[in-house]
Length: 189
Image (cartoon, rainbow, N blue to C red; front, side, top):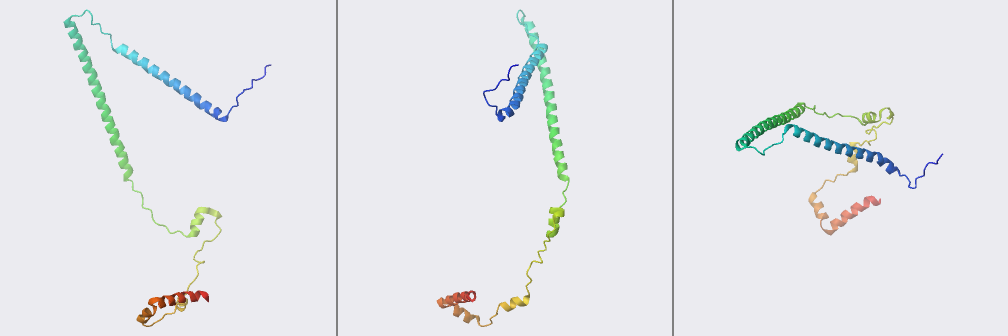
């Protein structure tokens, strides 16, 4: 029994992956070429059935004129058919366009309900997002420090006096030094 042949070239996974694709592309190109050949042969067959070869040799002038009249009549009939088909095609495209516009109009007539603002607490939002996993309470108001109005009034001493004296005292370099010393002293204590 002969041994299986060992390939000299390593087989890469990329070539294995591309092989079915290239086979499909080759098959598609083959079928496309065959389709073009079939269309061409069908066209030639149809034209050979519809068009009879002209034999103009040995015809007199009156016979040639009759032949020209017949050909002109056939051309007129074909032109009328072409015009009718073109008119039907234009009518159909116009109708399709109108129907598309009607569809767009109907889509636009359905009013979307206005969205309303919903107040959701942090707990409800976490419960909606996390479901049953939500155990931690997010009561943010409980973590806030309560401030009493009386405490704030005690911290700020209110000086009532003549404002003109204060402005004169603060003007110039001495006033700036006083402001600097005043700002420095509470932090130093």
